[in-house]
Length: 130
Image 1 (tube, helix red, strand yellow):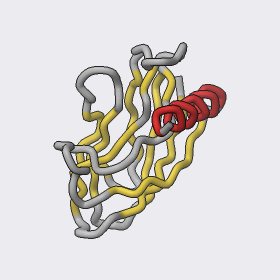
Image 2 (cartoon, one colour):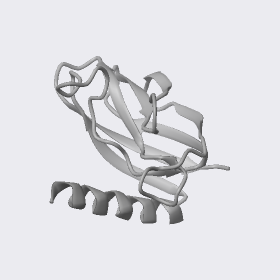
Image 3 (cartoon, one colour):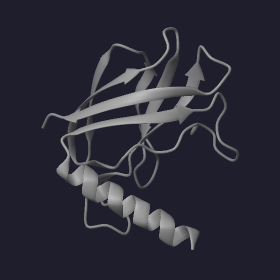
């Protein structure tokens, strides 16, 4: 039952992100990785299709996070110590998303929260530029 629900949510995310050029999403980042995880301290963002993205983050001053792309296989860290008010550019490769006809990423997630000992809400702004 839970797997069906998660699959439906993922599919909805695929449909929304496949047609959207811009994403704005608030994501809560925990001060410690999730149980059983070495890095992941947040849920995934919306799915990102293949292409080049420009991203920025709204978060408290003095807080930094690292950003990973959730892809099949090892998840690459694309931004180390991301800060509020800065723009970052990265590429989402054409990797097949399991259970989907889309290629790209299951989304971004955050880890390595610095500057806060409590959960922090980060507003992710992503724009596909190519």
